[in-house]
Amino acid sequence: MTLKWLAIVVAVVSLTSAVTGNVVIVVGGGQLPVVANLLAFTTAGTAVVLAVVAELHDRLNDRLNALSKLLVTRLDEIEARTGDRNTGFVEGYLLSHGQDAEIVPFGRRGRGAAER
Image (cartoon, rainbow, N blue to C red; front, side):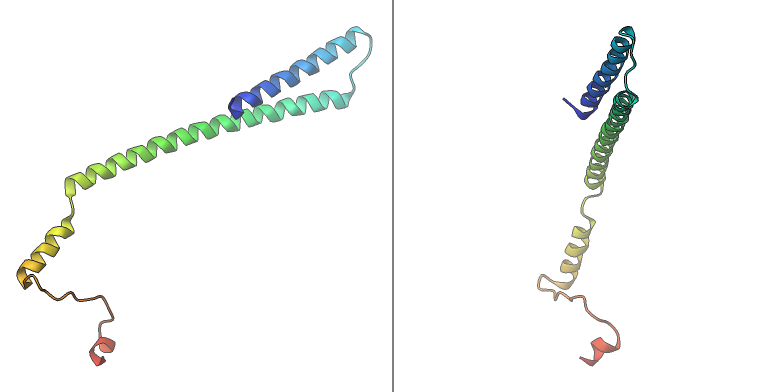
């Protein structure tokens, strides 16, 4: 049972017990203590708020899942359409400089590189 439905059941049981207690006590000629009513209605209110938050969380989770699937699909589509453009650059570089072309590492440029 999900959190939302469990919270709804708790709210219904709490309200039912409060109403039943009030009816039974009033018919008998008495009055249910304020603390009992306050506890029942506070429990019901908290359960309703929890049910609403759980529903909003489920909706947000569904939207994020749909968004991530859309993003993955879109990125796959873009990759399929463009391919690896660096592959052509590297192949062209190697063809123009021979197969044994020297690979130049990234490093400092400028005065510090010239002095070494």
